[in-house]
Length: 120
Image (tube, rainbow, N blue to C red; front, top):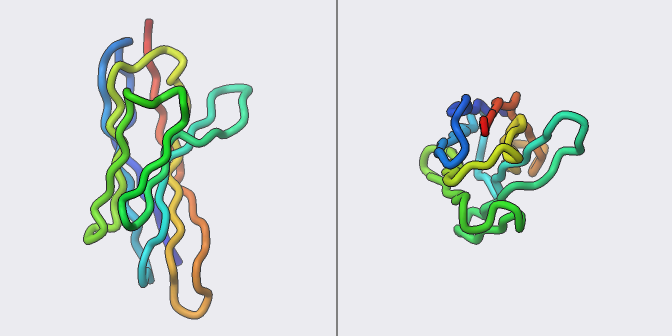
């Protein structure tokens, strides 16, 4: 069993910053990719950013230059630094991880989501 616990969401004014954190726990042997996704009301869940265990990153065009994803492999934690926030960044942000667990191998797990609201 793997659990992902997110923190750091909240309400911020446009132009402000927030930092999200997500820690994976459980019977984890290693973690391949970790990432952040978001879902705004009435819209599909979309990719925000991903990072591999080696540090390679990928960003949605809408957040390039404003958001930075990073991870601490020793802590099984991924971060999302969000700067220059815009009202259109308002969404529930979900953490995703692809850990390798005993017997079952690699799987995909999701956090419970954390609300980010950007006021204009």
